[in-house]
Length: 268
Ligand code: UDP
Ligand code: MN
Image 1: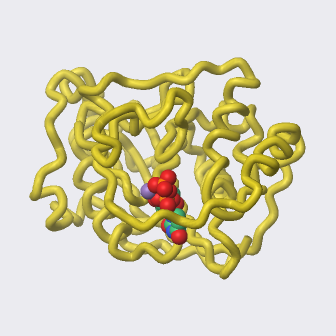
Image 2: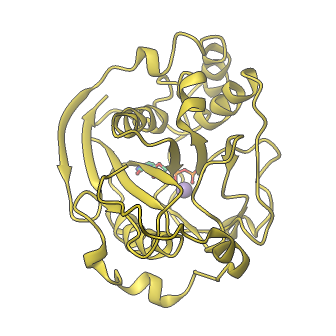
C-alpha cells in the first residue's frame, strides 16, 4: 500500500459501517462528486482519518457507454469513500471493433491490479449501483457474487448459479483459477464459465443477504448474444488450464491516469 498511509492513525471502524448500513441510493450521491480533492489522480483513495484494513481494485470492462460511465464514476466514489477502504478504479476499455469481450478485459485489469499489489479484485459492470453502504467492497475468503438482488429483476435472484455483473475475489484465488476465459467475444457465457472455474478449484460461492446486496441497474439495450454460445461454453469448459491469465495476449495502446480512474486502452 501507499507509504502515505499514516501508521499512527487508529484503525478504521468497519463494524460501525456494517451496522449503520446506510441507504446510499439517493440523489446527493448521483449529482456530483463530493469532496473531490480527496481522490488521487488515477482514481485512488486512501482514508485520511483512520488506517484502512483493506485494499481493493475495482475493475470495469468498458466500451461506448459514456453516460453510464459518468454516472458510475460519480456514484462509486461517493459510495466507496463512506466505507473507509483503500481502493483504486481501473477502467479497461476495448479500443477495437471486435465484438465486446468482457472477460478478457477483466483479465487485463487484473494484471494491472496485480502489478500494483492489490490483494482483492472487484470486477464491476459499469451499469450496476450498490444501494447499501454496509455492502463492504472487500474480499471474503470465498469468491463473492455481489449483485444478488437487482431492481431490474424485481429484486429476485436472477438464477441460482448466476455469477454475473459484479464479483469480489481475492487476487490469489483469481490466479488459482487462471483468471477468466479469453474466448468469449460477444455477449453471454463468460460469467458461467468463471463460476465453473471457481467450483472446479473447490471454492464455494458466497452471497450476502438482501439487506446488503441490493443493486440498481441502469437500463440499456440487450447486447447481441454469441452465436453458438452453447458449443463455445462446452469447448471453453475443457480449457481452464490453458485459456486464461496464462494465455492472455493483447495490445496495450495507452494507460492514462485520469482524475478519477486509471484508464487502460487495449486492442484484443
Ligand atoms: N459493456 C460495455 N460496452 C458494451 C458492452 C458491455 O461497456 O458494448 C460492459 C459494461 O460494463 C456492462 C458490462 O460490460 O455493464 C456487461 O454488459 P451488459 O450490461 O450488456 O450485460 P447484461 O447486463 O445484459 O448482463
Ligand atoms: Mn447490464
